Image 1 (cartoon, rainbow, N blue to C red):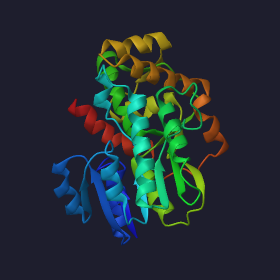
Image 2 (tube, rainbow, N blue to C red):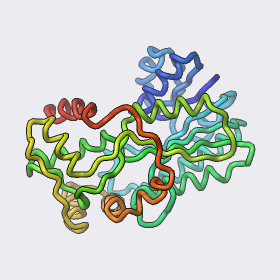
Image 3 (cartoon, helix red, strand yellow):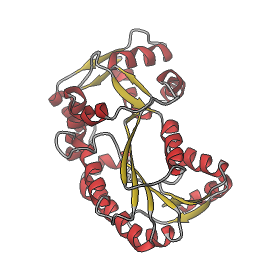
Image 4 (cartoon, rainbow, N blue to C red):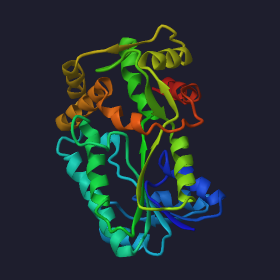
Length: 300
């Protein structure tokens, strides 16, 4: 099949591209960076250089595809942009995808959404996934969409490193012994590749997770890996967490969105729908990711 992959050679898109190529599919990877072209071609894929903000470019890139994989992103570095309206920016990307899918004639779509996309209330920054799912659900009935809803990515744990080094603890506005799901991008890529080779029918949802662990268990595993077996996960108030993010210069709206997102983990809102559709867990466990965490920790 001819498959279009957005997301350049990111944490999910690269292993997804590699797996699809190994299975004999023809893959075009969309990237906004010209310098990525040689890396994309080195994998055996075709590069399409342009941006998610350009609906006409996307339409051209999507034409003739059997399946398109679409995802929205604004890198974490943009969280410090005081002028960024993240919700509006991501919503616009969703509108561009809708336009490009309609105009290109694509009938099978895989969309990288997220846990939390089941609601636009009480989930903080994750509400933009609800918005984009709603936009894509407006596509005609003859367009089949598989909404992939991964849980929290292991690599988000890299954000723990500054407080581990400065204060000797993981600090967030939730914690404790209640288990929550985490996922490896490798497991996400594997599930998406699997879904692309299954029949498409209507608009469906699939959650993706690798392991369910409590915050305290996460602290034990990461602490053991980095040589700090007494590492603790400390829960602070929402206001303390907010002030910490504002103190490093984060966009206030994004900071509030992140604090509310973590509060939704603590209060159970985030996992309401996941618990109704709990998936089979993937292969990559936290102890395996911890090796990567150690390497990044030691570089900081």
